[in-house]
Image (tube, rainbow, N blue to C red):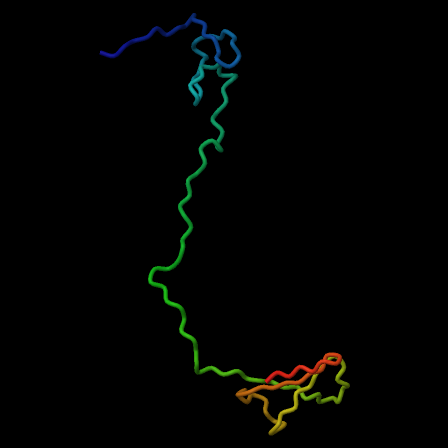
Length: 123
């Protein structure tokens, strides 16, 4: 048989928090084991039990990089200064073979510019 305890209708208990005497029937046990009066009770703060989150996903299983597209080409669009504006702080590219090369595939490129006394040539 289980143990039976007295109800404690007229009993007094000492609070672990304040040290004051309160009716035994109004005492509650806190999460840390302290016996305190109902008016002194403080629930456990949620930050004391942080949520456990799973790890971040790292990558795809059996992932393969995309193969380079060797069939694509670079298309060059040229503005040959159609309004004959002065070339201040800009440059104009003149095609060597034809003035109508819009949409032509670029196979080679060369440019020359001057910065002060220095000439830079890219080819």
